Amino acid sequence: MTKSQGWKQQESESDSGGHGPFMTKVCAWQRRNLILPLQRIQYVEPLAKILSEAPILLVSLWVIWFWCVDPSAVEFLYLVPFCEILNAILKESFGHPRPGWIQETPVEYKQFSAEYSFPSSDMMLVASTATCLFADHPGCVWALVVIIGVNRLHRGAHYLHDVIVGTVLGALLTMVYMEMEVHVMMRKAMETFSSRVTMVICWSAPIILLKYMSYLRAKRAKDPVAWEKKANMGRKHHRSLDTLEAHMKQFTGMYGLFVSLGFSSPRYDAHFPLPRNSGEFYGRVFVGLALVIGAFLLIAMIAPKKPAVAMHTFRALRYGSVPFVAACCAPVVFGYLGLLGNADSSNSVYSPQSSSSTMFAEATHVHLSTY
Image (cartoon, rainbow, N blue to C red; front, top):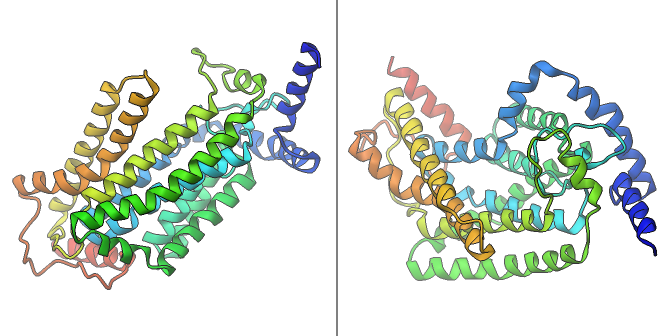
């Protein structure tokens, strides 16, 4: 094959997105008739940019839930790394490009990411989180799924089938997690330090093996040059579309989060007093998020970009700092600031048997009753 023939083949692969003839037509139809019309709606741009940070918003929701609504919610925070690690493996396995990478249709790529498109990691996280925290309020679940799903299409980051499959996988993962009572196994694993080490090692072995297999497959594949060119169209600074490195970053960050959860999560039988009033509620939210975000950004600032081992290590530490600060550091600061109340306070609404959504309603009732 000559060099010109190789380039033409890459252009053809770029337009098809690596799909078969049928899916190529389906994707082209979605770009023309679904994504482009959404991108013409300009007045939603400010809100769309905020919703693009869905993973950060969702993790913030988890830690707020832990501080203010249900201390046992940390048992389900494992769903975040499980979702992201599974997503990284699936994306590397399918290797589908994002709509904004394809030259054929002028879809604007509004949010740069070097990760593949299928399935949507944001939708997996949204569906998993909403199914867990708002199990008694299906309206809230559907509202979150629709809002974030439409936003992913608007940003030129996903196709409709990416969104739908991501949503289904996220909800199924939560259902399996609860049906198999993984959170109960995690609770037992927190009893001693040795049991924590055993738990982390046992879970790490299959996770790392699956990731290594998907990495080898992705390493053999080669993305068309046209994808990077289209992804950078209209940008002041050119960014490399290194999908291999992007998915490795996704994995190391979430693996760091998983390991940190295993070692820094508090004992689940320990009593964590809930807020007595709205002052304590909002005080924990603002002070706690300031601590978590501050630690996250500080590690990001000092993290080296080379060598790769150091970069990935610091990335794991950065994401691992979230549960450590939330579970170990923030409660200490709350205590110094008088935001913890009394450990034996009678207004605590925490009950291991209650669902998170029920406790949210009870907690809200307690806050309103103080006025």
